[in-house]
Image (tube, rainbow, N blue to C red; front, side, top):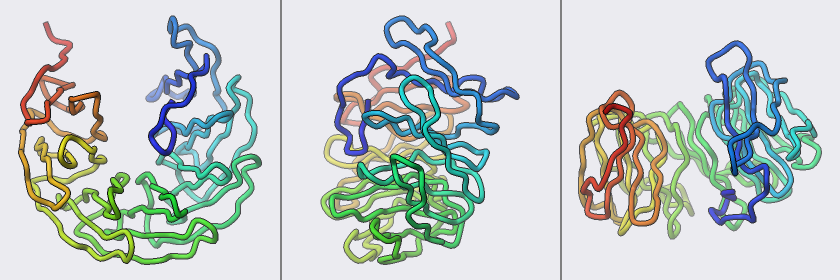
Length: 288
């Protein structure tokens, strides 16, 4: 299971969680056995859609839902606690091990006790929050809003350390690398922000809205946009290569060894793998 730091935990038997019936009237969170795909259990209390993945810790599954609530379950699917906010929870939460941090569309960033779900604090960031949050080793939270703002927040008390305006709404988590934050915005810019003071050091224009997270890849960071462009930039902001797909790129980019894995909407090739030079190595299609 992927942890907030990106390391891999010891696998549990109940380590496959699938959001089923997403577009039906009954919304369920379902656990599947990874060995054979058989169903272990379903949690059917939520009344809205699961927009993002749940956070999985050593002993909890913490699932945000569009019904204004977040649900904490054990690995048998038993509800441990529920917290309700003022609007939908879209983004996957993040934790430091004792506190869970959840952005909400009601403009608040919430901090909850991981064991009880009791609220420790909430901070109004002025606009809807749909992007995932990143936390660094010093306990500073970084996230953007749909109102073209980006924030650093103290995780201990929710105080805002700095605020920076960017070119458009922020829909996804930043990449934090050597003191710099790299993220895309709805205007199509790739923004590079200094994590220490919030200074916008540079922005790189692209030809379409960037709604997913980038990915560390090779000698830089890759981003995809709504126009189907994939761009690898160096850590100094230099464009290293472009690649164009037939379709739109909305999903977070992923890496798998030496490949960048790209999910494409409305294209002939729904999954594409690029190598470090920006060339297509393989693709998957359901069409024969």
